[in-house]
Image 1 (spheres, rainbow, N blue to C red):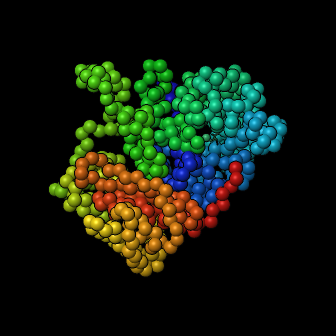
Image 2 (cartoon, rainbow, N blue to C red):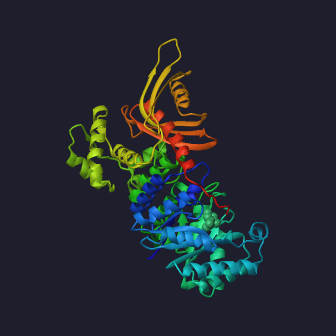
Image 3 (cartoon, rainbow, N blue to C red):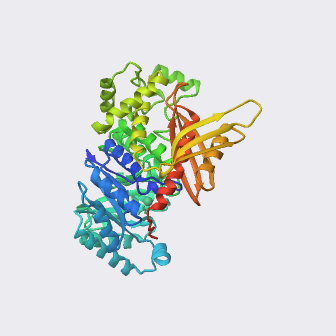
Length: 512
Ligand code: KIV
Ligand code: ZN
């Protein structure tokens, strides 16, 4: 059975989702989880786009050993040089060079003739070949490109040294039948088709990204580009979990395997949703809250009699556990450490002690500590290494019947100075946020506020997500605590700190 390579672009195309802006620590945590999921290739970013992107691609390439790490580059020497600097320490450095080929892009964006586009693509690939052992070339907007020209330029870039050819449906326009025909055409008209790998990269504007990717796999693609939860530009990219599970469940039809560890899917999905702030819709295939729920009486009856009547995928297959192992007050450090190992969490020995203290503190307030709690504690610890500007020292909110709630907040600032403020509001959260706003030097408008529990039970940890506009920049923040108001304060400060720290970096956004 032939194997399909999974190329994950959550950290590049996924990060281009409106409103998503991951920092270095978050990107590393996601990359480590993608490695645990066993993706073949991680596209970690676009190194020439900004200093921040460069650093995160470099750090990810240096950290990840079991997946190949790649970065995007325009077909220009300076982008390729920057990508090499970022990727050269990786286990298997590869570059992803792209250039648009469609008449619309040639005429309006590039203002180049067909000949000029071929010449630019070929010289970029030849230049990249002097540095990189593996080169992927993408024909941006391939699906709206004249097929004879697409075949011609592909043959040229293969001759120039490309190893992987990607056929993106950049604008999510094509349908599965037409996409199959594109691959069939290329198979018949690119003389070196069999000497390289072909890749699929689909956007979901018409809701056909997964179906298109699977159609390409049936017609010669051996690599599929996708993102966790299908996040990405506009309507997003093809969803990794849908493709991996479809290939597994419908193996009778596709007869292709992947190396994906399907049991890591639910955890990866939650992590990406949590760190990007992009909520997974309840009815989302494979990872939505309702994906395995049976509501109608007839269905429930059928499932109770025989699961396969209405269930084609078992929740356990993708990592939803029915009997989550529970630790508690009496669990010692050995049991805690064992669980960390069983959960596949990479923890430095020096951090285990501190994590155990956090675990014990939680057992003072919470009877049963589930895997979700442990993962949340570990994540908090990993991400708390981020630099902070403002840190929460204390928060109190008094709610006296008949009068406006009053908040008192203590923060430490960049020079460890203590900032103390009080304020009121029509509710506890508003009082808290009005007071925090006074403390952070400038207007900070709250654009979105969401709260969810980590796992079940009335003593569950609270996770708060906010979107704030501060210093003319929109920023997301997260906060975790057993107390809803402390979690709310942490989330707000997280969003504010991100803006301050990002502004400190010199950002040179390249207009691609
Ligand atoms: O959608 C697209 O065309 C892309 C390319 C850069 C591969 O993301
Ligand atoms: Zn794309």
